[in-house]
Image (tube, rainbow, N blue to C red; front, side, top):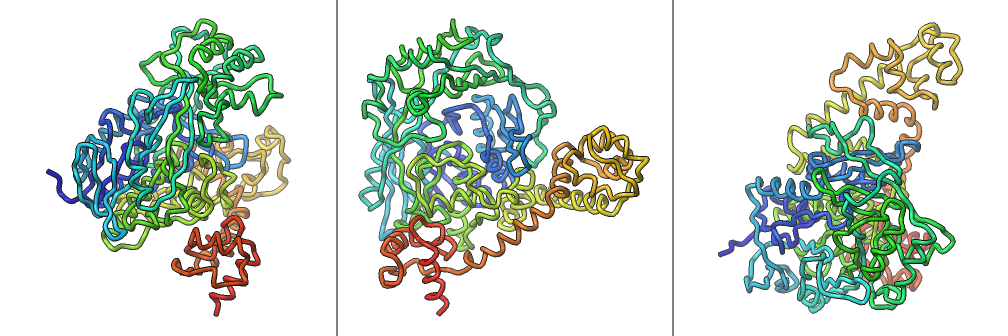
Length: 623
């Protein structure tokens, strides 16, 4: 019934979809096994993609030839570029999506990929022989052979849903949990643990009084995620802002004695940066109110998501407290919020390729590794799909460095530091974030993906066109002068000093008061240079301004990155027994033996390994 596949992907969430698409597009025969063909790439929590640092990841997925950006562009109902008041390293795109369209678009894309087959079932065992993966077994009793397997099980492994004192099995409300697979992996020798996440009530928009809330429209000139020719957003739906109050907090406290979190029924660790509303009230007891973002779930639905009101309290408590919030006085809910507890596998058990150290050709991607977020999951799935294909073909592994991509930061953090709470990406995690901007993901990554055959010719041509255009205009601004009489009136209007002699345009753009897009609209000399180039848009103009304004800083970042590169290029033996090096501290020996770093650079980032320990390794390997 089943042929032997090159790659089997288990789970069709964001990680699974990207993994299956990448491996199949590279030429592998792929089987995607999912519990439900109707819920591919389901947005289980908020119906949005991107955000701080997450937007950069979506752009990177797109630059590498993944689909998250394309699907988002085709299904978004609002776009905002966050952090525009800060430097360009912090700018992060975010889109509100139509939840149902998003899932449908993903399925449509996957069904067009020739090498990709589907099977609706549950995998409850991985089949291993001599520490090497040979296939999977399903609840229907099928044993399916494969050269490699990628597990992307999300929150489904022994998932338990909590609502007050009620608890029942499930990976998502209305969907059953995946049982048996954790035990199969533990019997092989893998370590597992528990984590927790949650989601808020869904509200009937017909019963919300938006006049009592603050409207948050999308950007006036909405951008996109994909570097391909995806459709431009022409109309948008607004989100809304409201707040909890002391009254709301008191209503919620009435259910604390039935809270599964406070009563100890939930053993898993919850997300620090996206806590439940009861957790926020307890941890930040000095706060009189908390922000709530009221977000539409799609174009043609009245369902709204209350971002910031995640809860596992009894449903009647959630309902009563919700009705004490401004704008929700007459609210009706579609379903209550809930917490979900699930198994994950500490990611220090993985290599940089996301292949497990214990079983050859077995890969983990997504929340199974202790991460949270669609974007982090999609990135891991993409990398696992690429690397499973590469290894099956005896090709070089595809690994991104911390200085190359947020995806590189993500994977290095996971396998080097592990997780003690659900991992979420932030710009602060990337030491070279000025190099890893959202606008240059294609010029950083597309050529690398093109060389292995994933990013197509069209992507490569677009990237090269963009690079040439940016370089051409920047060079022209550096050599072209502008006379005082042609610019002083504008400079004074921008509250910056007029010039007394002919000055290079680039020197004027360096001034913090000058914004290139506005300069372009108000100065003929600038327009004459830029209008010679077709295809210019707001995003490209912003990129030109960044390259000029931050040229010195970008160069320093590159030099700093190169300085640390020497450590990344010193390989370590993965079978070395560090207990033999008595000059290492005891903690370093323990940590190094557990994680088995691949380079000196990775070893230096392990918690508990000191600079003195690194010096010992450098001297030892220098011999």
